[in-house]
Length: 347
Image (cartoon, rainbow, N blue to C red; front, side, top):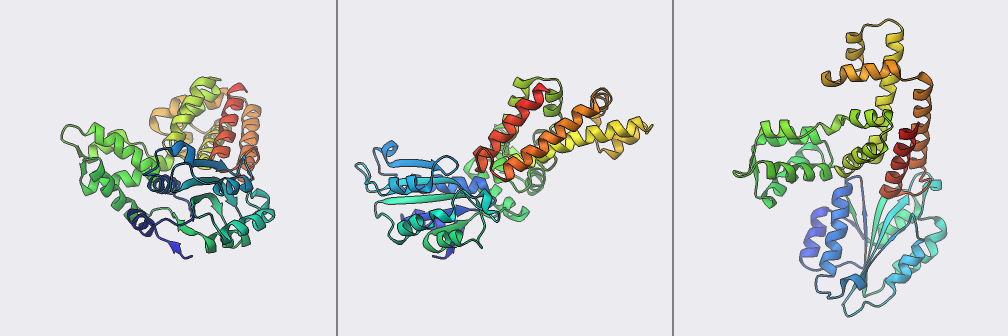
């Protein structure tokens, strides 16, 4: 089958035209996950026993054969059942895969004759189109790629969502919002909801309101997280981490930001040890004015050995996420960074 556009998928669902197998993949995870939900909602709209006819399998925990066996089961008092298969990884590095060449025979057998009473939804966290098993999925399913929005696409999407929220915003305010949020639809949706409530009763979102309420996610300030880790406050560290991740930050991106903060601490310490003035250190390290004093005081106080240990553990977590050690996909990545934060809060 050909790769469908997002609009193609929505139009098919409106007409209640369902493919037996869907493959949803791409970097825009919010719209990808929303599409999986919309497919399931549409397929099971008339089902009075949805809880018995909707099943989810994560390939980080279960083999694909379990999911395909569930798809072969008849629905309960319903025309169809939905089987969602999440955290699918077919990467350039075969060692990371959880859908492997060994699974190809059973997957090909199902895709050649999919159950007429089931809709199977593959949700891929990573899909290398050059791999043979990826080509099999692309050829035999209704595939939809969710590429990241560019700024103009984000702007158009934001305008449609504002209508759903019964709110308005002028062009300048919306462009500023998109500039702050970046290419993350999940974060943009969260911020639009927050702004729509804050704009009551007239429901007009202004540039000033955006400036006051929306942090710059392209340079997420995780100084509070760093401070909590160094203060060994595990509860607060995990609370801040949860908020950042729930706001839509990708675990790997957040890990990079945490690493950047500790690297800046180490570099600031070395610069001050070399006699560089505080103001110049703050300028070179691009520290926010409100955080300069606390940050540089921390840099003076913390031991170099501790910073070196922290950077080593961050590097190990980076490898663990990229190689799916301990579980792949969003769930596995989030678990890895939560474990890291717990460990750093104990150092």
